[in-house]
Length: 110
Image (cartoon, rainbow, N blue to C red):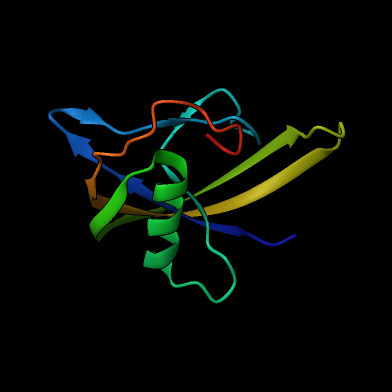
């Protein structure tokens, strides 16, 4: 077991915050910030840009580090196995070009 490191974008627009609805994993059916895991040899900002685009269709213009947090959780996966996760989240305030924002689920993660 080792911690999972993820990166997440916080985007505000006219008093609203951009969220996705999770379609799998321990938070299935819940709302979350767009983001996810950093791939091996991927730079943090590149991972943030990729995850935001994959989950929302929006393009990241800029980002500023905001905070770090960690979470521990247990959940039952699709094989009925209990998994334990230690997640470290890096949170960034982001500016987005959201003219191509998704309004539908893709059944991948959001």
